[in-house]
Length: 186
Image (cartoon, rainbow, N blue to C red; front, top):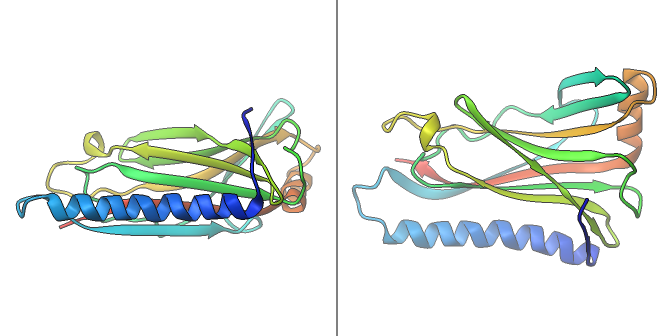
């Protein structure tokens, strides 16, 4: 697992700055495209996941529990001709990486998908952070808008029961966030 040392304020600033910068770059790019482009205005979508309520899937494999969080309402009006920028952020209550915890951001579109492992960032607000960029052209027809589903998955040694594992996450995970910057389909 990669470890990065920085301050909590710096991490939050970086997360916000990277998302805003990508949006600005997308806007500048949009200004330079010609009128025949299928892409419209730049958009920014973000969400906070509820550690207790937004579970979409769970599995026990041997002594490892996997719990995946997701929500409805992700963008469904994406221009498939431009890449989508994704940011994932998971903040914990402790000050060190949680032992044997794997955190992954998952994106899916059409019949395609991509997983991104999040890196541990050491600071005053310990966090797992991940950045990804995906293209949607292979998932959608040229004249239809694209969509993307964003989930965050945790894999860790089980406490022995699903209820205990859910409680373990609730006790260790402060919040889960995801954002995506994209251009809207005209």
